Length: 407
Ligand code: ASP
Ligand code: MG
Image (cartoon, rainbow, N blue to C red; front, side, top):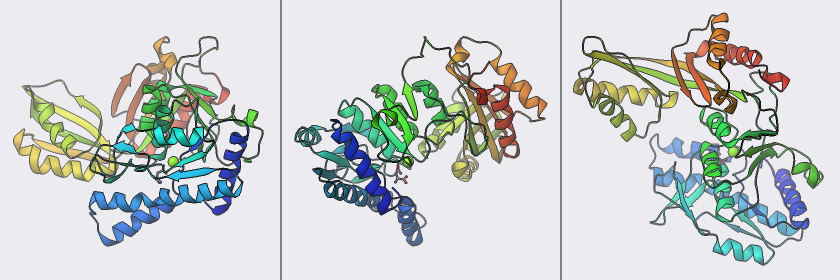
């Protein structure tokens, strides 16, 4: 919601659904740019703000949104009621700035719905068991929405966003990228965790865990467009591979531009080494992504892993200060400018040759692969950041994603 005009549009859209007989709970995010503005205020005072107080500030953006939206709904003659996260309550753990939802009490919301009200719940926020306000991490409103949908047993969770669905890859990188009408939950999870920014990854985990039918669609369309058309637009996240349709082998190319690679060279190949290296990294709340331990030579091995670029300096510090001496590593090397590119598709389970096609495509472009990791439905490679866009374009083409069917 970028402006008052946009808020009024959201209200018109909600009123349209309500009039058609649906019970509606709306979970708005802050007005666009607002969360950034709030975080800037915080950081203008302190480079390392207390996370509890940071959440106190950051959560206010959504409080403004729910109030304004409820007022806009009332202007249209609907009965509406807004709630903050703690009023519902949306209970979370106490990990400030990245809290996880543990429980939602839907009783009060259900009462409102039964009374014919539209309920507006602040996204991105919750409350821990000591009544501290928490936030769910950037983009957390997606997760709030899916979690609320799960708690209320909703028919569908519609996520209106600034793109009109999930694409084969980021259209800013590949112009020919194509919108997918449906994607399986597992593919979506891979795409989200591999850098596709459409939904916050936790929202997809929630959707999978609680089987919430979730649709990603555009918030930029005419709010009064026919309901029939709107409810079939965007991309539906499904739970079963659609056996009746010919399934594309590859659904998309995901990428994570901002990764850093760290190599701990010459550590003894003994039990507990991986734990000694990664334990302190995990304790510092740094997410580790790809991990490789080499074949050991003369009792020594190299241990390589990747982290998000934002965490790279901190991870290097931890290694140099605490771990290096303890595990008697010869040296710690790193490259903060690497990117990960992945091909994703459930069809990989039943088709061979996807990896070789991927590696051939990269080799034809002269791109060196630094690390490889795979799962049942994805293959990821780590490459120099310089070649990321080239790699994504070449792979999108090689797998014929612009044509609607991959081979
Ligand atoms: N307002 C929060 C953010 O900017 C949550 C969200 O937009 O989903 O990250
Ligand atoms: Mg968002």
